[in-house]
Image (cartoon, rainbow, N blue to C red; front, top):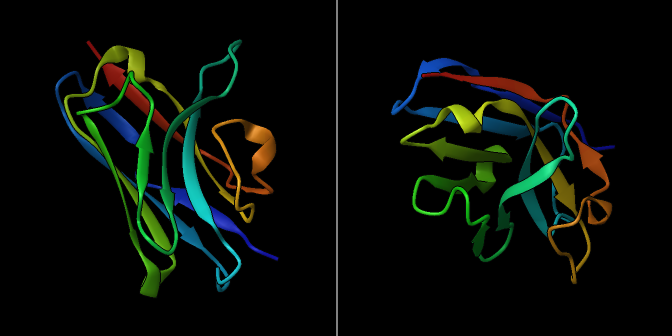
Length: 124
């Protein structure tokens, strides 16, 4: 069983930066990709960014493109989300999730394991 543990959240001012980490507890040889999602209370969980495990191809939501960067360290089974130029609307709980599907998309149903989330709060 794979466990995903997020860390790195916190409170920063608008315009600041944070780097989130998603560490997998087991070998991820069957993992196709790991994505970050975020959720604000009362709203749907939304896709933020994705990285494929083998090739490192990336995908970003339009709302974060150019500000966020996703990367991975296969040796450490860890995926990072570097967030720059943060805005108050980036405030949310951030989750990482993994998929083993070869035809995955941005929808949550593609992902079988999820982390517990880490709170990111951006003050104006």
